[in-house]
Length: 204
Image (cartoon, rainbow, N blue to C red; front, top):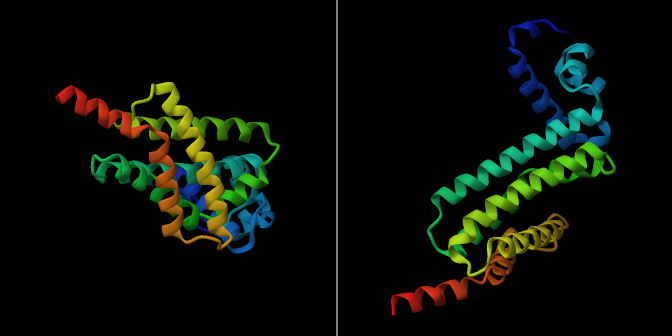
């Protein structure tokens, strides 16, 4: 069963295990994912899986972190290519968010499976803070708000994004409708008009 397992480096083995775990969640749901089921599906011994993740919550947290890293990378890549216009910045952030919601449905399931886990709650807060900062930094040049006020509105926009994603996943909205709604909410909340007006006043 474990033939050839020692040929992989520890980091490569971890990636293989996470790939396998993600496939289990996608095909059968989080309830089917245990350290034992992962070992069997990956063709490795149980001690190898325990060495990497320790516990089932540890495995689920590792999966959640991986999905968050992919989401952040997709957002950063989209921002690099976005035109320097507030609506376009908001649109690419919205598109990246809902691409993750539709392409990575495991994210919501994994988060739900870890409800009540104190470590997971702390990680979710930290990751949300990081993404909020990314969003606020991208929108800052186009807002007439203070940094603190802008950041608070980004928190609200992300709360709205989660609710819209739930509607999307229930089939009550299309991706295009979700992106348009979140883009409008974001642009409307950052006071871009005040910043534009200030720029006009300065020029005149």
